[in-house]
Length: 398
Image (cartoon, rainbow, N blue to C red; front, side):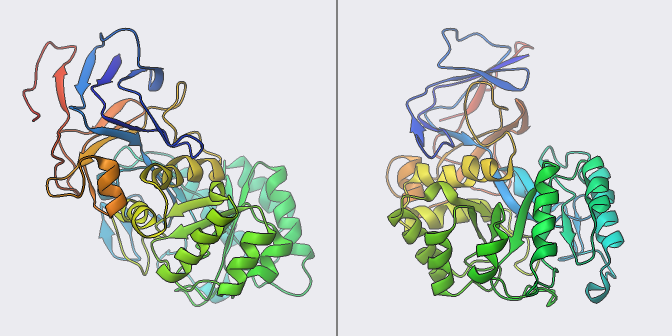
């Protein structure tokens, strides 16, 4: 089954090196993008973007899932589907830490390993509301051995996080964890800044990051408490791993971080997440709001802000999404500026901090949201199906 999206007004690539392009149509087949501006306008299904915009599905690099679409952190059901309607098509777990009854003061190697394995085999095994949820991230503790990492690797665990780990003067064990993880194809993330909502984490700033050298430093500008200004500067200046900003951010610290990355020409290190569900709540439009903050207050262009929330975040976590390129999964958000928004284009609206309106979302080429999002107002220019394989026509649009 082929799908054609035509009459595209703005095309966001997800690639920070070339954030926007003059692409007017996309051909999809087998769940992949097979052509940009194809020579044919024939397809089994045709969606007319009506001059609106397309962008890659947003990649939330920091979520805390638990049992499918229920989160005990906020006693909420259906949160993943609501995030989908906010433009998020992929999520990466930063640890499943909200199990009811868990004793943060008595976490053992066997317990944290088992929790990650079970989550990978349950919540991480299927898609929820169509969203690609990468779950089963181990929250390492002291006393783990290579056998624990072997078990995690056998279960398909791809991410390791330092959150409850008691960093000590002897760095040997923590360094071993990083080495063991990478040898098994896992990427390493570390909680940074002040103590987490659990109260069981330790303060982590430049002194630890300088020798730990993770792949991703989580919520460096607040999650909820940021690193010090001095540590943010030192991390930017003296390391090269990915630096994450989350919805639980300190806005002042984020502005400082982004300004320094721009000054050092290192925006490729910047990634995004929501750090939800948790104390920050459930925020279906959280990723969109992060994009708007970057574009309206931190001197990123609309295209750059979208690229940080898509391609940058996907690349840092090693997942093959976040770019609108030939051969990539067709995870696509069709959207536009809302009536009353600033300017005449979606880029204008985003630069002003105005929310986009979403009409359609595709994941692996399949429509998972049609007609309009439940979480955004409709855009002025509304995409519509103009034909499909059944011969039916839908007369919606401007």
